[in-house]
Length: 324
Image 1 (tube, rainbow, N blue to C red):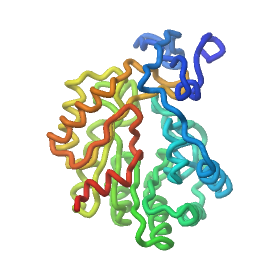
Image 2: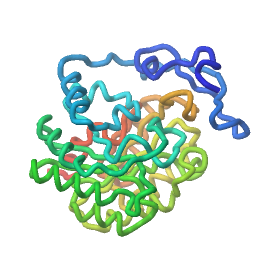
Image 3: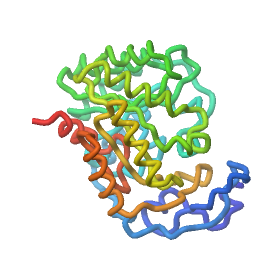
Image 4: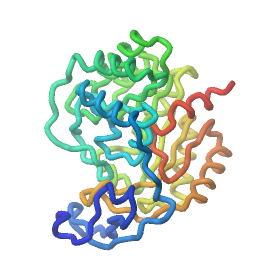
């Protein structure tokens, strides 16, 4: 079922600017590419005014001229206007097509291309031109590569550090199919923060992340934490996909047991009718309650709110986690 077959399905822009949000009820028997056409009114707390000004266009133009991708644009992040206006961005390396097909993600799945050896330098030059003091680097999943792209991650980190030695660097990495040697390549490049998102609770993995493995992702967090205190570990969950509070609680405990230090919790927002529908909009006060509970579990820093994403205010979370 395409958007043209489902009268009233709204665009992602409508999600931000107001109106209705396409949230068909999920039925396990239905074709996963054919969501139904039930609509839920977007709650008031998900409406906000978009920032504007020359900084947004400056960042967007610079990224385009540098032939770089950002997860802000490829994943249709609702915070991209705010982040670009603040002259920040999360760089998406290794192309804009992914080898996996996670049901929540707007990044295109399709043919992938050879890695661009000039990309690390372009990222470094753009970070310099933007005057960033903290940079987040993520990637599409590249299961076609023997190391999952780990060496390319390391080369980007090294290129940025060469141009700006004092810059803080956070990497948001895929699971590298559980390859510990690939993870070590990234860790040896010494990022300040290593982030790997669990995304959802284990029961929903077959529906939400069919090509990922919950214990494998937990093990990656544990292995990264064992590398030493100089690298902070971080992970995040999307809420509103049908999880129960007890499932969320158990997942947070699993993360703490694995040594995760920084946590992000945000509302899942359906990027288009091709992705899974939202099962529930979580009120802000519930996000506040989760933050209190997660801090009590021992997370050093927690960002929890409807618009929180894994790299949202990443610099502030990293600095707070390190303490005075």
